[in-house]
Image (cartoon, rainbow, N blue to C red; front, side, top):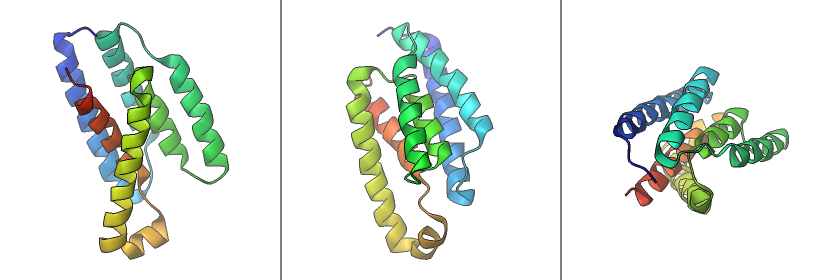
Length: 145
């Protein structure tokens, strides 16, 4: 992995984009495609600067699996696109950690949601973009060098 001065700036931009995405997902349970497109460019540039490659194949596989889950009403389309876009910048050896930490964040989100926002969760569902975003943050910090 290479260290480039722009990676700190891109990490900050990605963090701001993901925080905005979390806010809108909690508020409206919708992940805006404009945020996904912005994240696409941020993640591609970040991956290229950090690893000198963009992990396209795994992102495409993640997108296909995500849309299969979307068609089975297991997850939202925005969640499928979000996980695929984030996978552009996650090396294959870190994917298990990404999925595990996302699931762990999802569990915490369910517990907090059920304790404090039960009616909203029952009516509107779980804003899983929050868990995906924080799973990415946790993976980023776990493998930070």
